[in-house]
Image (cartoon, rainbow, N blue to C red; front, side, top):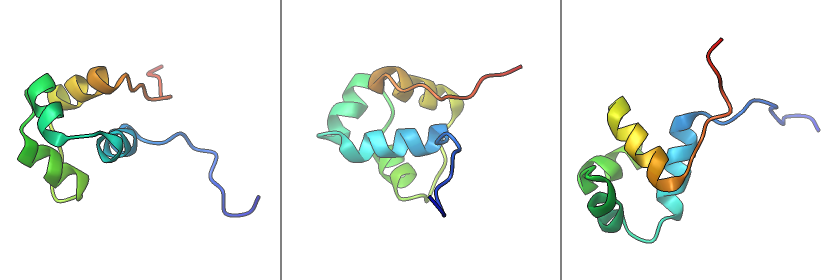
Length: 70
């Protein structure tokens, strides 16, 4: 399978996909406290998010990275 990467997706990629798949950014904002404008800019790649916001989103979407610290 040429061109296929065996790497795990990054947390950024996982969270952006979860946000794309969610029903409403307003609902995510209400559930997590992360502002809708921040979520929208993050999805478009215009802005990064803070680690505490990433933690809230990961918990909300039940997202885990395949990476571990050794």
